[in-house]
Image (spheres, one colour):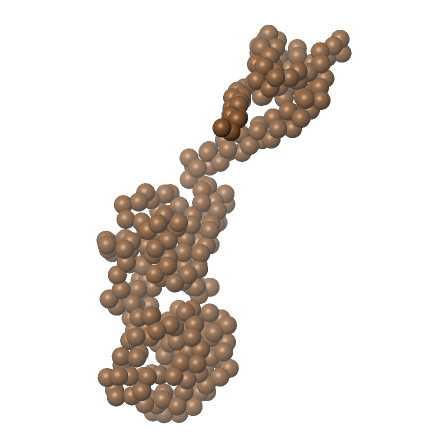
Length: 307
């Protein structure tokens, strides 16, 4: 059987009295500084020495000096005191709703999106708060929220999409087909799906709702499945930079295209606009912290859906 480790219990008050004696090198002056009697200081030190099993101070005519064991104990006592002060400060901040941690999942939003502006405003209002950002796919973020690994997630929801988490609709975005300014397809008056056949695409994976919708439209029109040259789950700046420099066509949300105005523009293909919602996911029946509520309020209230 493994030997048991003794569990020591120290009073924070005793620790503070110990540190006061270290600072003043004298029991009497430490008692005066702590506004207690000298016997109270003496008893506190005796309790600590009994717990440690060693002398912490050498008493003499010139005051109190730390022993070798006392020097070691002093370093840990000082850390404990500082940690307690920090804990008290954090607790006060939490009570004032100025601190805390918000764990949020995003699907690679544009820099000028509503959620990015809301998070920036939260940082300004709550300078002591901490943010943990996780970028991922909608399904993975939904699972992370449900498992309690994330507090909330802001994700797109294509038509017919359901989530196991509670979903609060924040707004709507339009996914469109786009190409670089000056692309040959813009020379066609009222281009249709057939006009896009000569060009390769940038699309998300086959599992994505948007790609399934585009593939279905091609099947209905009797056209072959689009040729996907670049597969990317997110329309990042890197991906859109490729689109802006080639003849690829891309399936991209309007919010992602906005910063690229003048370089990339939507192709006016009838029927190739997919409306999707932006939703705020939270754990079903979970507690809403002050930071979660602030984010929800900054994003605007919408219609809640329950799994």
